[in-house]
Length: 523
Image (tube, rainbow, N blue to C red; front, side, top):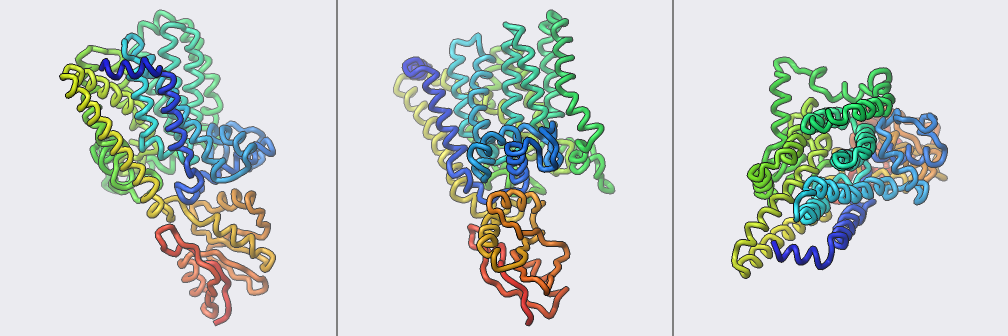
């Protein structure tokens, strides 16, 4: 341990943290517009609403600076994206950049949270730096920091919320900042509205004496929180905020003979399975066919973290760190609550994203404890042990980079992935727009209207349209179609006298043809 201490003291924790942040930023922004390859409809909706707010002060429905966006609902990621889109223009890169930046800032948040958790420890900087490093290279965190989803703001604000709560133990003024951070987290993501109240209540129980001692201020704080959450309550119970829940919850979609309690329990426990955490990840879980949420052949965590988690738990238990252990264990126990009540057959990396923080902190504690054990070895053996750990971590990291940057684009770009091809379609149609009356794009996209709105800003294709379902061919107009093979098959059943004249094909990165661009002509 003395070797590590000398390194930290020599170069200072701030410089090392800066290097970790730089690494995190590179991992989250490199080729950001090209990997994931494609652009999902949720991202397009975020980008387009950020654009309309930045340029018009209203969402795409014309509502002036709304608390909730009707087409997407969660506002934090959209408002975070608006100034970036205003500065850089609307693109895949500018839309995803807010998530990448907030993901990188979360490295700061976990560093300060870990440092505050272990404020009485001589080696608190070591644990905090290791936590930050583990989050910086985390497959789970990198994956969602590189896409314009609303997950990362939730993680960022919840982490800051707990940090400021711990700061309030010594300076009560920080309590209102903590409340504000947790409130922002609740606005960021639907599952946060389940996790945050339960986690806050549990945390207050752990620190019950502190609550009782400052009960008047806590009463004011609860009033403050209630005021902050009035728009959420109004949205959830009096507007359409409950619609998304009704689409995915198990209670309103019970199949005949299905045991709801068993489904919930099985879903909950799957979040702690070896497959989800260390071997297969989200994409390898039962019933999962969506490739957007993780890479193949790897868990949400590195396998080397498994023994570190066990060591970390044992260290806290043996040191009788009741409050620290209680907080981390509560976080572990509650992290699946945003996912366990859904229709999913097993763990899902998106709705359980908040679990990423305690896993990194406990892994850091485990590595810290392991270094303490190694320090008892003879000098040469100590050096060899530390070097071996570094090799294992480095090899695991390189393995993940290969999976994500090299292999992932080859199988994640299709319909159940990132829906590659819309930009290529719009680019082709825009160049051909002067030769046709109407440019029609297949309806076989996940909410393709959002993609059309986004790319119409980029390409300004005034005669580009989404195709009707079933397909309608107007023989009085010159029409160019960008369609899938299923559209061609459907059209030839409706219009047997016509055949499709292919002018161009758009292929996925693996070489498979995804779209065909052309016209319908008489046979």
